Length: 193
Image 1 (cartoon, rainbow, N blue to C red):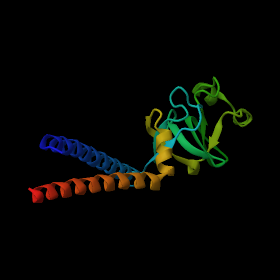
Image 2: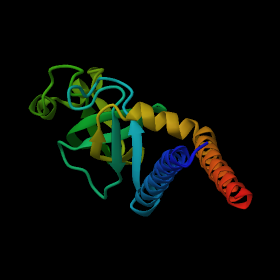
Image 3: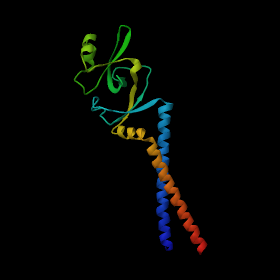
Image 4: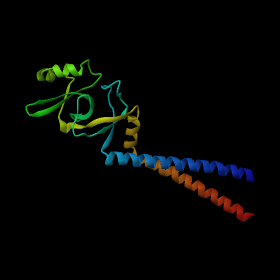
């Protein structure tokens, strides 16, 4: 191998090494930022599972939720309904028999408007199968941000954390091993001269 080939090999490797370093560094920064947001500021990311809030959110979008002290009509809430995660708009707040209910509805579920729900009697609300009657303890929070189509990626990463970490560590190890091999070849060439 001549000197110019050696220079090209080193340039290519240094580019690869710098690229891998930047990728690993970016992933670490993203993970730290996510951890700070989730645990420091009580933000929670979720994947939207249905199109009940279309066109605002569709299945596969990622929403970021934050618990609030109180919620107002028009807020989009994330709550559990019989163990299923639901994201719907808050249309009315009612107190019935000393219990406060948050009446929520998906934007694309039916043509009901906020005014329609406000004018309904409690019996009509109970008869309507599309209006969710949610108690405060079931509400996880208000949607404060969303990312189109990121929910699937988020779920993949959260379900395969060890695989992602193993891939990052493997890339780092391969990069470091290749760097050491090139350095050893350089040292041998210098010693042979």
